[in-house]
Image 1: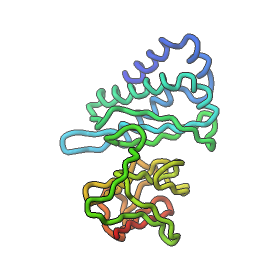
Image 2: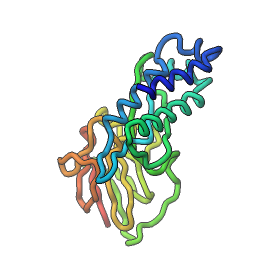
Image 3: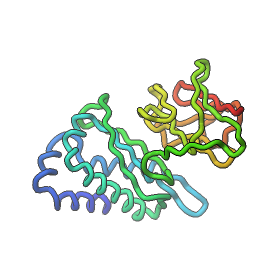
Image 4: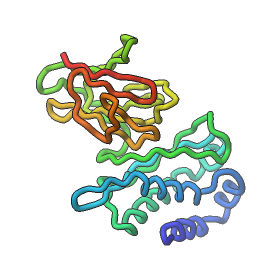
Length: 230
């Protein structure tokens, strides 16, 4: 594939020094590129006139691998973002926003391990801190079934997942780090699956995205969250 050849060629031009030493063993850059292209293919969305692919990729690696290439992480991220752009162009796929590649350290992973989560999102970068009252003035929350814990949905978007710092953080082995998102659209709320590994259920049916109604149940792994309006 031309995309991978171009990627390796760009790395080889900088092979003197850092890359040659850092990537002698363990996770290799080309493995990252191959996995991104595979996730792009697996998570494409077919629209009426165009096929859309994820533009945001979160790469979870071991602490050992992260330490090995931290000195060139910025350069590697730029090259992997170019892989996303070239991969989409080569296949005639669309991107809704500029590519974004993010590295995370997962201390539970061993050297050479890699986990990737792909997301199609119009907004890249960290979530906006802006909070606002919905136009209707009605309060909306997600409540953990049978527990009493609840999260107020007072942002434009709230991510559900295992990732520390998520607006709705759940510790469920069946949940992805960034599993799903609740998005406010006017007076409505939508649940959107973020390309999770195990999928998202709404009232026991799998969904990619759906508008929420009062009393709806969102199931992620074994965790059930109830959507409530008041």
